[in-house]
Amino acid sequence: MRVTFLGTGAAMPSGRRAQTGLLLDADGDSLLVDCGSGVLNALARTDVGYEGVSTVLLSHHHLDHVADLLPLMKARWLAGAEHLEIVGPQGTKALLDGLLDVHEYMDGRIDLRVREIGAESFSVAGFDIDAKETRHSMDCLAYRFTHEEGPTFTFSADSEAFAGLANFGDGSAVLAHDCSFPDEVDVSNHPTPSQLGETLADTGTEVERLYLTHLYPHTEGRHEEMLESVGKHYDGDVRFARDGLTVDIE
Image 1 (cartoon, helix red, strand yellow):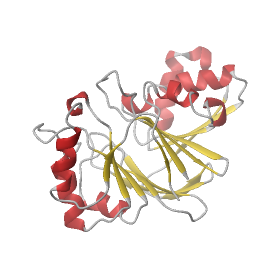
Image 2 (cartoon, rainbow, N blue to C red; image 1 turned 30 degrees about the vertical axis):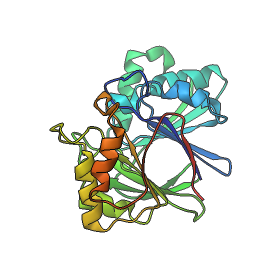
Image 3 (cartoon, helix red, strand yellow; image 1 turned 180 degrees about the vertical axis):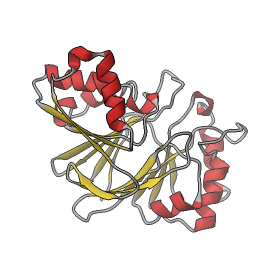
């Protein structure tokens, strides 16, 4: 499985990061996870391209995770694609219906298939997926991905750090976890480095590599101290994700 971080930013642009989006690619199967602002451009720079992605999996419906959905739909229509599947939590159909009410000229241009899921196990686009509810300001799902019984990739989506989510990621080859702000920012619905490190250590979570993502501008120039904050509690391979980073999970 290959994971490409298309966007590692958040709702406040930094000029250096697109909003949230990941591309999963394995043996010809491709899946786009979240589709925030800037993700469509980043996807167009990959070998897969927006022509090669016919399924989008949404973690939740905040703008920095869905802003490029309709632009993706239009780009695929203009490129001659005939369908697009969008999978996400409860309310995903209402989200798409609302977008098409505003931009009604796009309604019917492409065969749009919408599927709503919860905290369950399911398969989509060739990937086997487990979903878990996170602790965020709206309904949000974390995902654990495998492909043909290969190694596991886990994406926390937006969430506070808590034991249940750490255990959900335990044993993954790669865990990409929200780490939106440095320690001194008083924040809920997202973790700081110390909170994340403490949670991973307290639960005994073991992953081969941890990537910090969903980064607000507050984190710019603070990466070393944030890594130190995680490392005071959690003894693991911790790195910052960046736009365009591709990780082969083998």
